[in-house]
Amino acid sequence: MLTAQIPKDPSTGDIVQGDIAVQARRTLDNLRIAMEGAGGSLRDVMMVQVFLVEGADAAAMNAVWGEVFTEPFPCRATVVVKELLATGMLIEIIATAHLGAV
Image (cartoon, rainbow, N blue to C red; front, side, top):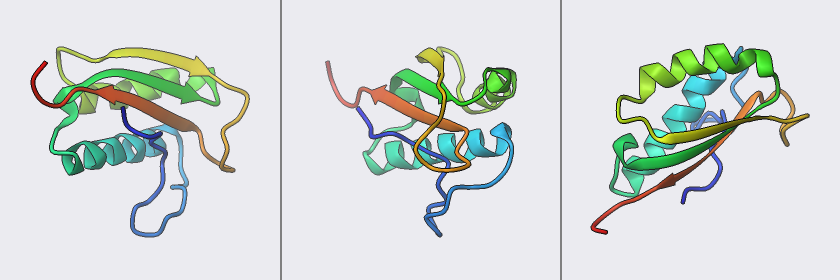
């Protein structure tokens, strides 16, 4: 399991400003970086929980998701929440991955 991934710029530590597509790309890129740092890739991700502040952002987030993940897609649950911890943050992702032999 990985820690929560958020739209934080790794070079500045700031939350990336922008719409859900911008924030989703940053968040998923952070997930990719974390997976590669652990010796894996996004292909090793098995389950993802996506937390969105706005339900209306689901379609744009799905479009970015389709750019990043390929079949077979990881299982995913998307939940709309009232707010996230950091001001301006529109998305947070928690992923479960499997590395190595079963």
